[in-house]
Image (cartoon, rainbow, N blue to C red):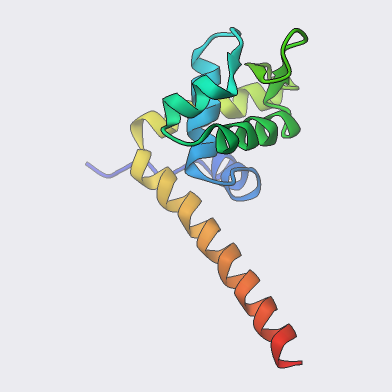
Length: 129
């Protein structure tokens, strides 16, 4: 029995919008909270990362239209995708990630590696100039 490939629209979304595996893990934690607020300290504890890293992830997700800030506390966010289309894409990502973890993480890592190589090449070109 063959493995189901990542749907093309999800592949494009991952390639253009997903920065890292912790980015996905953070969005899944907020999504799983079903609209309840979560502070960045708790997010850091759940992801086993420093609070500063968790705050950075939450801010990235906020800037991407995935989370909204809690009006009462600046360090709290809740899952609130900016559009029905984004909600549908995040639902697809969550579903596919739960059944094809290796495929999705390999795609994310391939993007990260490519970006790192592009950065290194740009630095090399500047250095050689």
